[in-house]
Length: 171
Image (cartoon, rainbow, N blue to C red; front, side, top):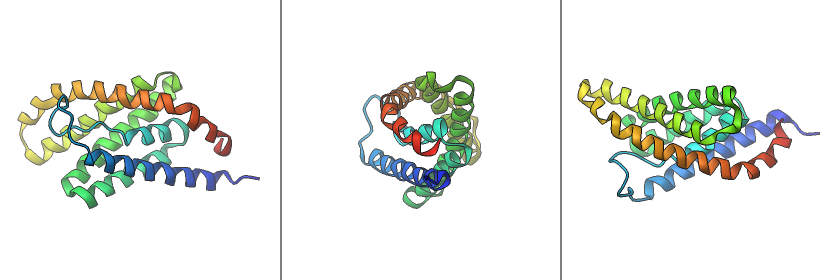
């Protein structure tokens, strides 16, 4: 007989580790010429989106917090704040969209969560810099969010047949 709680904890740990590795790999990649300065592809959010679609609030937020602590350790306090605020807004968005729409549109969820992530990061930037000039970067981030959201949503959609094999262990 399987212990559902143990399986969920283990899966959360694996997803968190995957998110951290993807974040590390993404940091090592050069910025693509078509990407605005300071933006990332958000590949680690694929793990967070899977947690939001399949596990629960606690598991999703735990993964987000671990990613933020990893940013603190590897990139400093400002990166921590950006990751934490953007990540929490993004995760809440994912949880809401998955509850309302279900798994029908991973791409819509990817775009909406990327927009929320960037909104959280803009809010942190605004608080740190204390200048509305930061908001001038919003249109660029909106466009980047659409592109990265499509990418992460498409990756999750392609991976779901493999991930769904795990459901028998924790449902």
